[in-house]
Image (cartoon, rainbow, N blue to C red):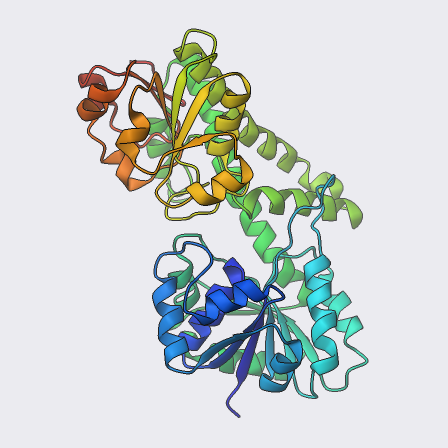
Length: 437
């Protein structure tokens, strides 16, 4: 039997998964409760920026393999494999994950499930969620549950879906495993590792991976703190330890730290869930990982304040970057915007530039200034903060920037600008974890 797929939730994960599974040749229907989002997707447009996704989406809509709806009934009658791809944001006033969308989407889908259907979770959830969903669906004869965590990197989501480094499936039956082997057959033909686990292991893989990456980032940022105190260079330190194959050089870029919709909320939800199941002490180190990360933001503000003479009052500060990372328009928990807002609140005249994320940033921080042209933004700058490592910032000519700026102070909070070039153009260059000259 040729499987037909539904994807519940068409945000970042869901829209990407739906489009890419259609690209693999499946008939796919995406479901969302937001009619405006559904209409936008039907027109072949993605409601966020992700390189390459618009083309994949439009191509598969035109080919007739991909459609979108607000109707769970339509999804239930159309598909036999249903992927749950809704969000699990951090609860207000708590570190725990808000599971409203996960349980709500399953409840809405349940009346329309058929015997033989497979419900597959992809959302990042607290361990134990799959078991709860399976219990809730036990009254529907012949319906099974599996868990298949996602490992998408924003900016590379299409590549990560079509050519993942591994596939993990948590199942309770050979039939569920076989269905997922058939769904992912094009990927398995490439030799992609396919790991079969139980429910809790599959649920833990994503949060464990994110916790490890967050720990590695915070480790090198802790080293940056030590390097500044000792007069050492954290970029050379990272290069040296990265040559050790047991350590590796990925995620050893010291700077402003991590943000976005995954790492911060995932490590906090992981800590919260560990406490609920009696393993709180196992993850106490993640509190310090989180604190090191947040200290990078405060330290950047301190360096910026010192650069303009001890007070931001009335000073024009230009922030290069609003997205939490390059090649994305995602501003969730953006370190750069957190810094920009703090400086604004201390009286600074802040202008933000970003190639893709200005509209999203303006919705969250409407009181900041925004400029779409980078050289216009830099005009009369008294301090330039490089906070998101977009390629176009690395390619700026510091002499051209110096010609329009008022004061030549730059803080490279991502350690990706060329210090020699900026200093040669007359700039006072400062970076996190590196000597002042």
